[in-house]
Length: 175
Image (cartoon, rainbow, N blue to C red; front, top):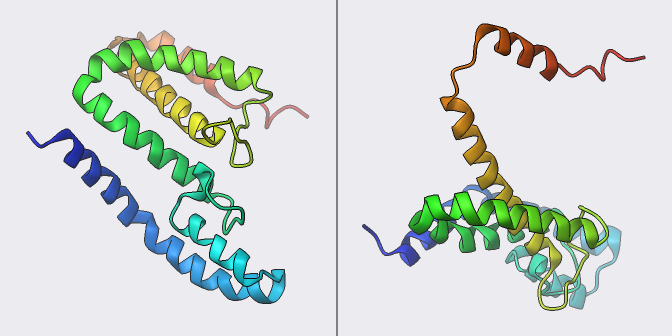
């Protein structure tokens, strides 16, 4: 098998190749808008490089190019941490650490003030957006385990009908 570090690098590179050209295109389109309409000076424009490099979401720089980039940068960091762990210790990580980190992380987020820890929050040594992404990725692992277990259950026809009835979104029908 491949070196886990090299495999992780290739995984992240593959992810970047999918969406990074769009980021560059948006960056080039937004530069004139930032200069003419928003009035960015040269210092603010050079500071947007951190956004372009997907490092603003980690706490580097002051000026935002695109606020939603915090999510991509935070998720990439979380994937760089979790990918090698899950590849090497899949069962142990997903059955022990993912649920533990999910529940402790949700409690942390809730007690931090809200479940909306995003790009504006600084946690002292790390942007809370990275913490949020790490928690969400662990929650995804927990959901994966649950869905794999549900697939093995042999549901009766009655239970399938009941699940269908209860899963219908009733909010559209209430007036």
